[in-house]
Length: 343
Image (spheres, rainbow, N blue to C red):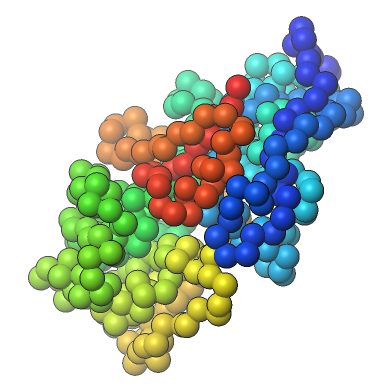
């Protein structure tokens, strides 16, 4: 089965990696280029991207080092989560007009196997939600909290980077599932205020002093932390270890405080405390928890429909502005999910 729209593009703009960043990325590390689109082969679709996801993990892929995901190639387009509309299809699985999520962002148009896309229902939410609360971001928050950190009702939870896309959802999910107290850290007074609006019991600006002191004050009458959802690493991870209860659980999702470091970071100086407290520190990748996707999608769709959970987006428009949006993300300019809209 084949279907096409009336007029099809023959080329696409794309963002290429021009050089590997040393420390903080700069605009010169990226290049806006144009490439020819290949003709569709059997089983392939052509997608007009509506929006792309801008995520911290992409920084690691800009380094030429072995990691859980292959590094971006120089002088080639970057990739990442995107949502778009099928405008041509040579697959019975997709027809023109379908809205799909896929992994070929950083370009206006993408040719890919239909099997490498996921069809979504745009009547449930705006398309960008499938890159955030209803997508990988939301699943990361849900899996990290419920499975990796083994959250249970009555836990005291601390979330670092809590005003970001993942952290803001973690805190709300924890409150909805019965957390006794949820604490978040963020990088500005405005973000702290937003966390309180989202239902966090306490929040602090990590620029205001030593993380351990700020976290201790935010605990209030709680004796300590049962679950720490770590998006930051560094000083905040050390502070959390010092204030964890016995048998506490730490879900290690990210370490954005170290992503642009040009020197080897110093590990938490109190890591040995994890022995006596019998802590669990567990790193995770959302790809290992795809089996939770149906359960998560049903739960999150219900929470969003009921207004129990809300999500923020920081939206930048235009493919040419993708590098600036990424650099701004690493500097904490976003509240909630950083999204780049296209077209």
